[in-house]
Length: 351
Image (tube, rainbow, N blue to C red):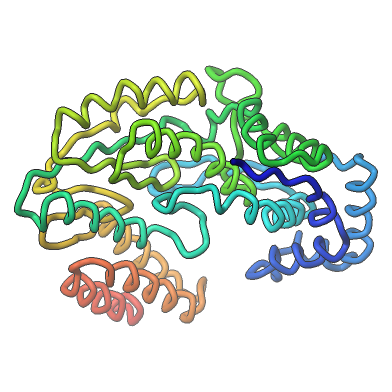
């Protein structure tokens, strides 16, 4: 039976919670001009937010948009400092409500989860189903097409309202969710959540938890792992995996108004290598995806050259190197790690 939460608004709107949300938000951002400007009038701004929230007059502002390559192009929508502080307060209050509802093998944007644990979990499933590489093992790997831009805001509000009966919280969530339009002409209004919002990370998991529960409890799939809009199902029978596609598409389209990406639905043998979250998993080893490796070398080269020219600090370039070495430590990549460190030394010394 679902637990319904009634009195959540004060845990979002109180000055104490808003000040705490600001402290969380400004980590790593204190040098940014918009953050400094807000902090210069911090008490005045926080108490004004509190008054607007309590009066029900808070209106979410507009977004500034830009694009990143991650490695494919992704549109990012950045809210104002004021709104991002509210996002932190909302996340802090609502994440404990929804976190217990999520399945264990949903790994995106959750505490004590993440990409590496997601890859570890998939590898454990592959080894179990294949009996350590000795038996037949297949994966069905899918990607949801334009997930963030396609989320149906009305359906999302219906899902949220099953666990939240506090009308003021629901109105606030509707304010935040309705502040965004995906901007795709092919999509109707009332679609999308912005990738740049902290709240979108939680809302994405809330929305796709409907799909997770269908996979686990209706289809009774035992070996399933999801990271945001990418998911993998592991089994020992290729035909059974193929037969799952019809009910999966049906649930996504009929209940969530989502579609699978037509070019990113694959069924592969474990022996062929399973590509997931930047790594390729094989029966007896794990390697880094080739495009990930190339991007790593390219980006570190760019940063090292910029550091040598005085555009970045040496410490910043060193942090990037250590971050990449951390990624490589999760694969059979000792030789690549040595190559990366050697080239970094050459780049930093311009030789």
